[in-house]
Image 1: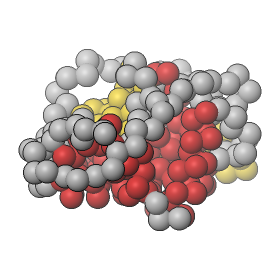
Image 2: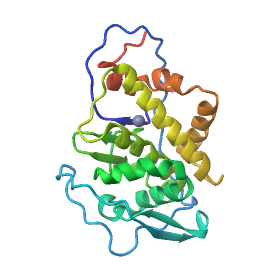
Image 3: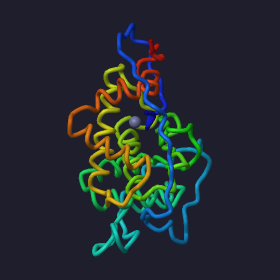
Image 4: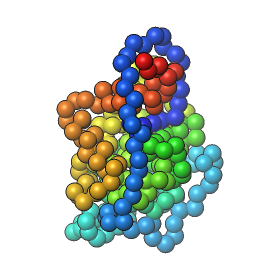
Length: 247
Ligand SMILES: [Zn+2]
């Protein structure tokens, strides 16, 4: 399945023998019954275009951003103040904030992405591609087709891309294919961990079901298979410099 990616290329690394099983492109159905953190309140962010200049180092100050069930009660949810300038969509902000509140070990990644001024947009992407990090622009793009998902789903997808942003950095490059694949595996592990904490059990979409499956793969130590086999149509071009022919 196509899922997430970071949009960069590295050089061809030679002949890679691999059994390729292309997964079905996953639909991103939406549901009106899933729970969402409210949209960004008044004074929403003012965003420049995708390629606007990266701001200087931003502070990582925190503030209360949402309150109320199911995620932000009894404790209100704290997020990073700079997100109000860096995140273009209130639904994505909601996902980020509940991840920040409920997954403390993810916070340093979020803080690093903020410090380096990584912007987060919601825009249409190719079907089945939930999000991507673009190092050249220091931008994360979340596929606007998933904005109807529960905040738990959006938060997990965003957490995956924030992992890329924090570990690759603006204009970052991988040294080789192995480091590219390794980074992807860690991003999926992050996504699994975050969704396992955030999910409420009432998410009922194809995407939430795939995240449930991802958690199982993560616990079964099968993420490498997911990246190299099930999603090879995405990650072979990303990490190996060219598409692996299926036979
Ligand atoms: Zn990724």
